[in-house]
Amino acid sequence: MRRLYGYLMADSLALMLAGLAGVAWSVWTAWPGGLAGGGVRAGEARTPAAQVNPARIAQAGGQSVRAAAPAPAEPAPSATPQPDLHFARGLLENGQLSAGLRLLPGAEFNRGQPILLSFLPGEECAYGTGRACVSRHRGGQVILLTIHSGLGGQGEQLRHALEGSGLDQAGLTIGEIRANLAALQGAGAQMNLGGEELDGLELAAVVRVPAMDLKRYFDLAVDDALEMLAADNDALRAALDSGEALLMFEICGWHLPGEIWAPGSSPTTASIYLGVVRQRRD
Image 1 (cartoon, helix red, strand yellow):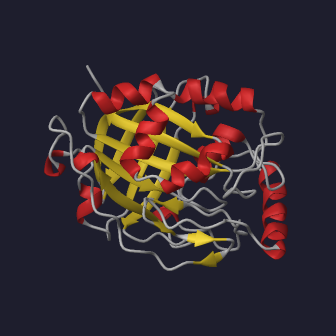
Image 2 (cartoon, helix red, strand yellow):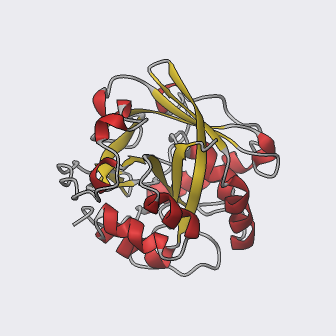
Image 3 (cartoon, one colour):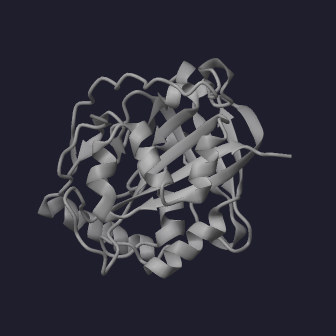
């Protein structure tokens, strides 16, 4: 099984707190600065957003869930690079070094302002710890980051830029979200690990997994889940088939008004956004 699967339904108190947080956020138009280590800022309300790791549920319904041991890596296609040659291999080597991924979009997305995802890499990533879960797949071709997207979470800036924030739900329409996804693809990117900068990266693909596909996405092994998504996304298909080293990140999206509810979805885990970063081709 790819993940320990559970229904991510928040209790009424958690939803109320999330609603208050959502209202506060919707009137806050200025972007926050970089989150040191991705931690929750003092005094900031938390949402019950739960981000699911490939082999664990880091948090569900506002309650911590003990992480399971990572699933073994699947066999690699022969064309994939060795793990020790991956440009993001440092994320697997030292969980005490702060890390960051900065996306540099064009003017059509987020008014051209950079988006920061900052975190501490590790095998466990309980919400509020500032950690992102790191796992390796496709025999070393893919390093996957599982990143929290609630208020104060490491993927907060990106989630809000893609879908907006309402009362326990996204603030934009599906048409606006799709336009944002198209505008973000191809953005430049930079990675920082313990103060060491790596430039020359780009966002090769960005995919939204809707609520109706969440259960299957969560249940499948990572390699199989990527194949499922690549069947409907040419950019992801091309990236996987290239054999190039890929750094992927997944964050949760909030419920989209008018989108169907499905098993496993909740107000703050109602979609997944998957980004694919590679070294830029010159």
